Image (tube, rainbow, N blue to C red; front, side, top):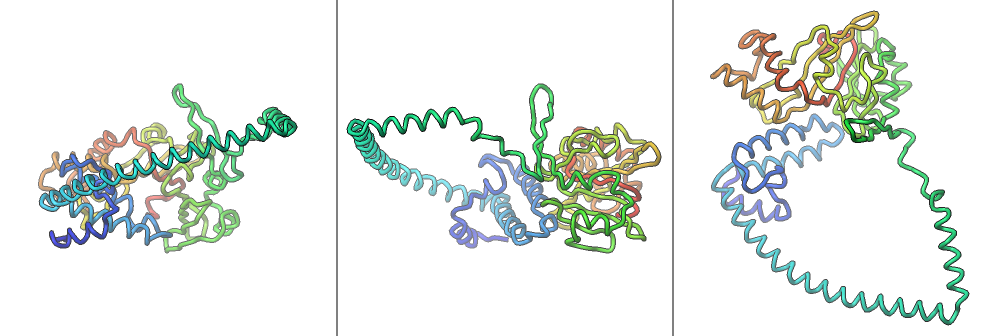
Length: 368
């Protein structure tokens, strides 16, 4: 932990960093708001979520931890606020001096521009045919403007697709590489066939294989015969999005699907037992649910998840109120609360929330 003397040295070293901005807070934020912001960012920049850029995640976590240590301690926060006030005063004086300098430079540039315009007019007066050439060029450019401005927003791998949403038009970008594999036709195919499409795995464990598919993290799970039993898109983003038209019974983009949308089609489901509270460290996992859907000829399982945020923390607070003095850092379903009661509480919190990870296939729970 930082002492007051160490705080002074840290502030000098990080003079270009604002601890409030690092945590996304205002200076008037309460201690509870500071704590919640720290939890959210600590989960977002967990090193496990950046396997290809662990240095970035470690640097972010270092900044987040220092900012939290300063702002969560009243004495350090007061000292830091006083330092910020002195910096703001110094910057204000510096900006005033800089503004005067810019005004002088602006006046000088305006004078130079006036001279250039005057010289150009005199040139056209002496050589009228130059003015005629420039005029003809401008007319030709205007007439061909539409041809010169062909829409280049569509990229071969990421085609823009328009979709109407409640009186406003939103444009999503379909990742064609993802669309080739995120469909039920890929379930039960052999690993070799899958890798002929996406290339070799980047990371391998006993239960799963990780692939980089056009910059997106895709996880596959296999049975004993190296046949794919389920596929997961981890961390849905604007870039890592796909049209779910090939996954029964959904239509539209996966980034727009809520837990409620999935549960409308489920035969049975249950909420994940996720780690609540501190769990022994600053990081909390994703919240989610496993659903079983009735396909035309067989059952299909969906495991949808959402990254830990303030909603997840509110669920933890509800559990604490219902079951005070109980430990939710370990196994608690059917020990402290029944699965059915937990499902109801979970659904109240997450029904209308969009998912951030999407997995489909068979034997999902057995492979976890």
